[in-house]
Every structure is written in structure tokens, then in C-alpha cells.
Length: 431
Image 1 (cartoon, rainbow, N blue to C red):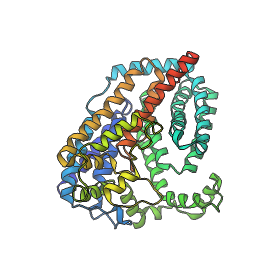
Image 2: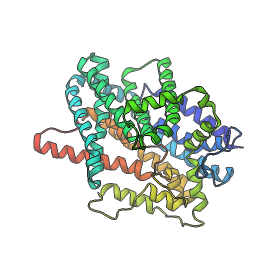
Image 3: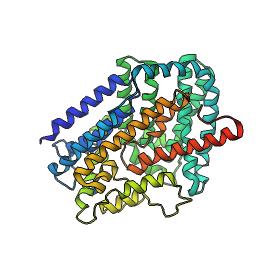
């Protein structure tokens, strides 16, 4: 199979490049490239190989052949990665910014502590918030990651006891909110993004970086093992849905044993989980045979919808589940799933147009990251919103509305809050 070695070589190259460069620049675009290759190329390669023990779910089976899929997915993913990594902020300019932030950490730390408290109050209010404004309360809750980055660096450089205290408290609260919402994948992705922002500050040795990657990979495997049991347990209203209760169930089940990691069921589930190409293949089998190409309609509607709140546009098109069901022909019950940026590119522009579109989509992400880094020279804490902006960048269950749309909405929201606070108090949310 011709694409296999190209895919595996590409994946190995981007991983090695990420490891080397993660202490020298903001390398979020390399992580996004690695995840895109993993989900859209490596997953399908493994699916079509002898390593696949058989799929657990019908909806995770590839619906088009090897050649048809890779004739589109391989050049489109490479095009996307080129767009993601085409430009970067110079190492000298980034080092200058890092030194300025280090010097100003003592002044930023008290603000970061208040921000964490405020963010967790917002997280607490989310379940009681009307749907029309819930997303904006969620945005405020995401600011805990910004405060966490500042306090982590303050603790490292200035050995602040209060920073350590707030760090411990924030970690505990993040874990509790993650377990309650069952958003394990989001937590892992947030950890990875925060690490890529912090590492250029602390310049760790290669052995420490490799150890951190190993631990994060182990965490991902552990989450994949316990996730089905955790969701079943937390959704059972008759059970003790506390963090302690869940821990006891996991411990008594012995589900984290090495035997379970090697089992065919777990291997098959993991392949199905990380093979986002299966979703793309469903769209390729359905469009344009049963549903015509959209010619950019979903991209335009998601872009406009990012600027216009649902309060103003009540009938704004819904992405996620609705788009998934329309373009795959599958029905989802009790879940929300996206067709991925790659699937949406195909749905709109077909093979050739989709390849070109993926380059420009990657380029937009790249330019947003670089602009945030450069603007951080005026607002030092702005650098630390990058983990929030790209939290829905490239991961299973996403699409353009959830990735690019989230970035646009969050930036608009932060800009409005900043102007409002400055008019009232002469202070801003982003320092």
C-alpha cells in the first residue's frame, strides 16, 4: 500500500521536529499538524493494515477504499500542515518577549489569582445559565488556564508559596470539573497546549521532554481505558457520582491492568477512536451521490455565525451533530460529533478544491497564532490565551465551526470585555 510509508515517515518527522523545537518557539502548530496526521492518516493506515483486530462499531468502518481515501486525505493533510507551519515569529523576538514576561511575573501573579477564582465561579454557574448566554459563561471559565500559566511560571521562577497554593487549588478544581463533565480528552489537550506555552520559558533538557511525552501518552491510554466505565458510572443517577466514588470503582475493577491494554477489544476501540478518517470516508461515500457539494456554504455560515450571536440570529445554522447526520447519513443518540475540518473541506469543495482549502485553513490558524504572539509585546498575558484559543483546534469530534469559529468568538468576547472594563475601571481583563 503506497501511502503507508509516506504517512508513517511524515508522522515521525513532525513528532521529532516538535520535540526539538518545543523549547525554542511556540510550537502549537506542530502539535496540530501531528494530531491531523495521526487522526486523518495514521488511523486509516492502521485500519487498513493487519494490525487492526476488527472494528467494534459500524460507524467507525471506512466506507471508501484505500486508494480513493488517500488520494484525497494525504495531499489535503499535507497541504493543511504546510499552511499551519509556513510562517513563524523569529526566535530572537520570542526570546525578548519571554524575558519581558519573566520580569513582570510578580506584577501579573495577583491578577492571575483573582482570575482563577473568577473563572471557577463562572464554571460553577454554567449548569444554571440559560442556553443563550451559556457559551459566554464558559468563555469566562476557560480563563482559568490563562491564570494557571502565569502562576505556574511565577512558582517556578520566584518560588512563591501563594502561587503554589493557588496552583494546587486550581489543579484540584480542574480535576473535579473534568470528572463531572466527563471531558477527559479536553483536559489532556489543555495540558499539552499549556506545556507548549511554558516550555520556551524553562528550556528543559531532552530527557525531561521525552519523559513528559511518555507520561502524557500513558495518561491518554489510561483515559481510554477508564472512559467507558466512568461515563456509565457518572450517568447512573443511582450511584455515588463523587470523585472519590468513581476512584473506588476504577480501583476495584482492575481496569488499568496491562492485560486490558493488550486486549483486542481495547486495541480495536483505540483504532476506532483515533481514526477520524472513518468520518471523512462516510462523507465521501455520501457526497455528492446523495447530498450535493455545498460549494463553501457551511464555511460561510460558520464564519458569519462566529460574529453574530444566537440572540441576534435565532435560526443560525447548527454544526456538530446536525452537520454530521446530514453529510454521513448516520443518526447520533446522546452524543455530538463533528465531521472534522477535512470532512468539511470535502463536503464543500470536493477533492481538488478541498486540498486547496485545507492549505488556507491551516494558514489562517498559523497567522492567528503569530499575531497573538506579536501582540503580546503590548499585552504580556495575551500569550497565555493561546491554549484556550486552540483547545478545539484539531481533535476528534470537531469541525470548522468548533475550531475556527470558537477562536473568532472567544477573541471577540475578550475584546468586548476588555473595552467594557476599561471604560468602567480603566483596567482590562488582559494585562
